Length: 129
Image (cartoon, one colour):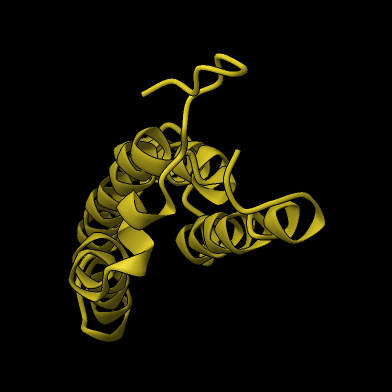
């Protein structure tokens, strides 16, 4: 949809998946709960890594979809952050990196902090790009 006066697309915050409780639950809350649950139960480290790869990939896809739907600034940043985190954990699980005692938790933590920090540009500029 295009605004005839300036040829810029119209962004509809109504299409923001985060604003809809069911979609927010399915795209972001559920994968986080599954990932944290995998940390709490006794799984092999590679199995826990696989759970986080799936969770971060799911959330990253949700952010990319949301960025395309409503052009939310946060999603333009957090989508690639989640996908990069998933790729890093996948490589860690495959043995491409040395498996240190807290490597998995460190990557998960850094990814989640990056996703949280991606809200800062919305505070500085605006919510929708």
